[in-house]
Amino acid sequence: MRNLALLLLLGALRGCLLQNIRVSQIPAVSATEGSTVTLQCHYTLSSTENGTLGWYRWYRQSPVQNEFINNRSVSIQLHRVQISDTGMYICEVTLGLNKTLQGHWNGTFLNVVGEILNDIMKLLEGIPRIWHNWL
Image 1 (cartoon, helix red, strand yellow):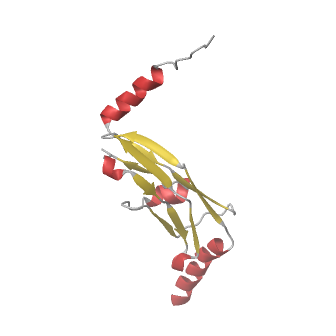
Image 2 (image 1 turned 120 degrees about the vertical axis):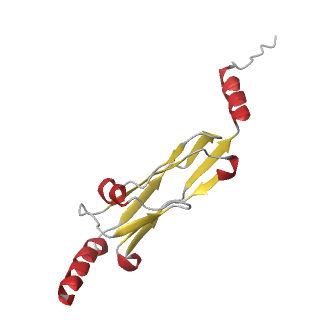
Image 3 (image 1 turned 60 degrees about the horizontal axis):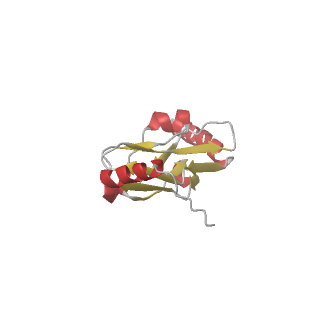
């Protein structure tokens, strides 16, 4: 029985050892205070073989295993964001035991603005630029 467990473990690790991992994130996301925002993180493997042992880490987030393995997506949703949530969010993906294969991206900068500032920015976007012609 012990040998069978060891064989299963080695079989799972074999796929991880022969692969490279690439993690990608959107560089920046803006949101209005109180809204819901999705921070995207996807990973690809150099081999078509799926990894079966793995996890990911976001600051303040726990893994959803089915999305991670099947869709290679570890995106998260933050609800009712506050200005204090502004900052860099880095997604790190690890496959295999003992961190056999690990990858991360530079991160996504989340900029949360207050509702009043957001309304002003929308208003300014609709105003045409003033052009002067000097004679």
